[in-house]
View 1 (cartoon, rainbow, N blue to C red):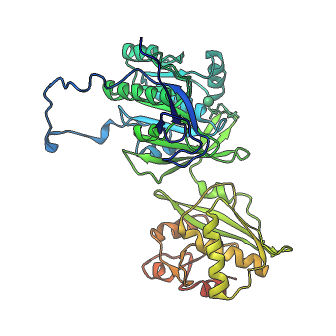
View 2 (view 1 turned 60 degrees about the vertical axis):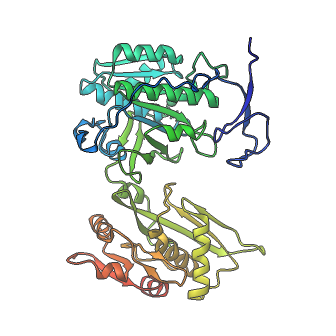
Length: 453
Ligand code: TYD
Ligand code: MG
């Protein structure tokens, strides 16, 4: 009998090695190698090609229509998916424990069952009773939803082929296992093999498969990176555990744009869609406080207004502290350097804390102007008019550069009752026919500070 081979896999990127290593040579992560029994010898027969003929198809002969997409009944989720579920696609939903992944997908199942579509929800984590209790909180379910508690992939394969549902939900990929592989569920080879067989199921039968994935403490889906490469769509469900709202972000999408976000609120009866996130983000904004500015960021195709807060105070130690929550730390340092050098503000011996209110993460350069105005407002201890919003990218020479979709941003601000908008002069010059809101075009950070503060 052949001796079972032991191999070591990096849990972060899936690199295979014959011996244990402290640091992964490919992704440079430390302590990620774990021992696993080698899966059945693959490729032994690969040397002999069976010789069966394959044929390529002309592009013009392939028919594809957008009509095949199935609405999930949640506009926010549909938008992130690029207009609905594509039959035969595999969608990975990642997120922290307790963020609401199971709830979201159970609600999707409810909506699909409401459209009389056959849906199969397979849970490896909860019992049928637990799912029922959750379902009772969410509401009325149609008759076409079936539940199954199973972790064996061969059994799952058989039942899906047998019942041929239109949508399958797998709650969570880390609990699934394949009998042919010796290692424990959740290990690299199990996750990879499970994803592979679910993928074959999705493509072969044309069923859409939603897969829930846990994330590691660094915030990426646990298991090898290959998992993300294999599936068609990767969505991350994120949000502050202490706040009620949740953001669903598309990070990969073979059938749509990846920048879209969907905003939800966790209520006692499940997740509720938030149609106007700006209003939601600005709730609780202080009035007349220094260091608080409303900025506008575009997420996908939608403008979102958000509050940028800054606190600048004298540092008691030689080395000032800087923190940035919800935005890029290095960007904040860069903007402070611009203020120091181009505007002449002496911030070198000040502590500075920047925060995007509500715990949301925004990295669009257009919020630069918001960060700068918040910092200066706090530094000078002078509040900015609370009916003013601002947006614009800042360059290293202190210039305020044009940003895209200026019109949508201005209209969103107007819709929410703001009366003035500080924006790059180049963007202002390109805007025509907007009234009801005062547009203040600025060319440099210095202008913006003089006009706004
Ligand atoms: P869950 O979907 O189980 O999270 P995950 O599958 O991502 O681990 O969400 C559980 C949390 O959501 C839990 O803290 C309770 C809360 N919740 C509500 O607030 N309202 C509800 O209607 C439901 C079903 C859950
Ligand atoms: Mg769950």
